[in-house]
Image (tube, rainbow, N blue to C red; front, side):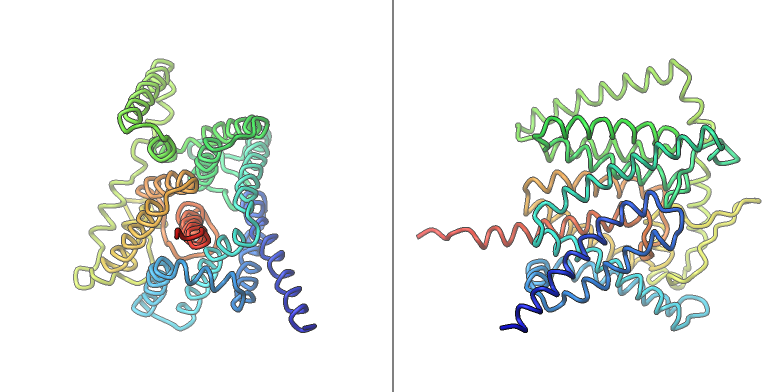
Length: 406
């Protein structure tokens, strides 16, 4: 009996360590200046989840979401194994990507484990994301105005911490904005709602300072998705709401055009995206298009006198590294997530589906490797995966707990 009590206390401590670690992640991501500090909570998350392998909660997550987890694991393992057919393959490179996989999978697991143990965990996580992003923006704008925190080429604000690049900053802030918008649509606390609106306003200002355009397309797509998944009205009424939103959007664009602000956006044209994609497409291996170059391949793209770090599209990057097989596995995972979200439709659908759409739209024109340490890909892809699996587990357990008729 004493041993059982001791083990129960140890597991309780580990659950609380896991809780603190996950809640630290948005804080370190948006506010830490050192990359070591940004990554540190993910290591604690990994160790904590591994320490909880024998718990009831862990077995519940595996049992209730085994198919979805299988899709996640198959995709990640395949992409990691592709390091073996990269140029100059090595076990060290394979081990590095397997370690990244472990961090991603334990992150995905942590949401379900914590929501089973602490019912209001997701709400607390989202509020910390919102507060951390708002503080990051306020401090970054201050540095932009006083110390010139801007890109030398086009005077775009870059932020502190793990979001130093203007594009990464905008996409990360956009993630928080979309989550806040979804959360706000379900919020019944008036005071909390007002605070969320104020912080969302700060986030919008921060996005404007970054001068990143793709984030707006993603936010608009997420907003229309939110209309369709949140409203309980008829389909005709939803179409009316979308039509009204389109008219408002056109009015805003007209005002921007009349005031001349569109010039600051159009001056960068397409940011060389078509040229980058054309060059990447030309470089795709004709003899190994099925499996790609491997995830450890050099993704640099040369166009005229310019050098770009990666293909600037998560879909094209996935083909480049993992071939058509990698892209098919990724689409299979996305299809499984959509199926899970629609089948287990509830309040969490409002939270997850707009975020998933936002990420998939924004990553058309940006993104590199899906398998890596903590960065904006975790927010745009692996966070909605974690929330979808958490919803699936919670929904199935809720159904099983209902008394059967008769």
